[in-house]
Image (cartoon, rainbow, N blue to C red):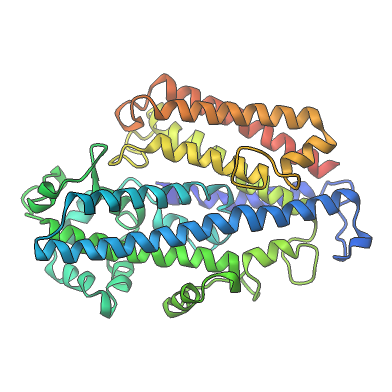
Length: 415
């Protein structure tokens, strides 16, 4: 399961920071422009661009869309009980889910921050879904009652009563999608027919009670991500909710947000003593880590047969879309903006300025990985054929991209 893989992020980050210690001018600067080299100034500028125009907007979008998803599922539960739930309502929920899911997958090149430190990643994105445990939970009238009362701790009860293998995106995905299609009103009006639920007579009402409470938990954890990075720039209502939940949202042992910590690198209080450490964090702990996860875990586990059930987003059949968004996340980190072109203050522009050959190589491999994952979205869904040529091509292209990302990180550290 993904939650076990995430443990490697800390190891990668430690390795990245060790690597940068070999840099040719790796001495901590004093935060003054007058003491910075030209490269330091460039790295400082591209860090500001990256934090403010990649990390911040993606987490803001994620928080907004998961909030919308929660509200729509609460409304769906109410409409179900009044007999007015329509297919248009379900379709709207599914579309919002897809948008929120895309925002989350597009953030995975910066899992090295609050997502990992606070265990948010495994909490909201563990798979495969434990359908047997979910069926047992939904069979409990006591648990359903605890989840149903959203005005009196229903969301907190989801955190307390439902395990990580039923929480988050994939628990909700199971309720609103099936076999790659939006769930139908008719299906929700009947009894759950998944084999894990056999003989339990779980109704659509129970499923929507569960989905609404879990969506509330998902929203709260995405608020935590947003507030952890944006600090006081996050909406006050989101800050208030995070504090109400008593979630941590600053760097451990500090009152700095994750954004402030990165933007004030080299200054007293920041955990990042040099701008080269920032580059290694972005490239190795961020971009390389998600390459390794997508190629080796998300695709590799099922492709090689090591774990045939290790398939992300099987109910919506959108695994390849997840993978493509992950590589897009790398593109955004390298370009310093959420577009296909590189900003003047970006890692890609930095490499173009100081090592054009390496920049061209990185751009070529990035485009190849994007193309391979995009092509895969047009073919047979991963869950239906995890051993396909599309899966192999995507895995190979991502591994090749990973190699060049690490080559770039090594070059930046040493030059």
